[in-house]
Image (cartoon, rainbow, N blue to C red; front, side, top):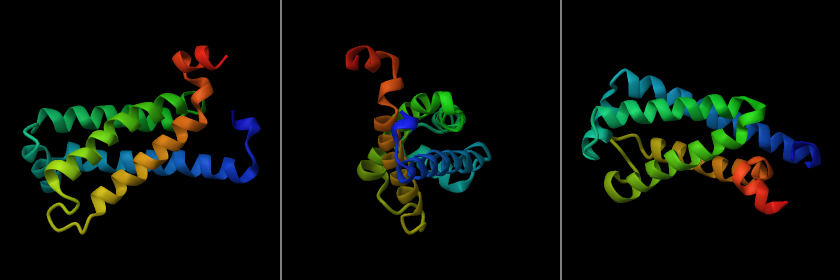
Length: 135
């Protein structure tokens, strides 16, 4: 799919990959170190500490796959699922602002969500179970 894109589309594609991957990797530190915000979030959701560790592990896989050109589709699908859960958790349980962050965590989650949707769409022909139906 990458060869069929215009130069602008390729730039947006790569920016989306790297920004999403960097956001996912940056949040790992806070989840794995037990930062106050992460503990608060997962305690509020009733998933502390196992949910925090599981989320960090899944996000690590997503970030690595987003970096690897052959597996962008897989990283996008994984990040789309995990970050959709994060956005829904913010909207239903946590609120946009968490512990005075002025909505930063929610904003970052939305950036990853939109990037993941875009990357999944752009890589749709590489997804094995979708590829068989697209021909």
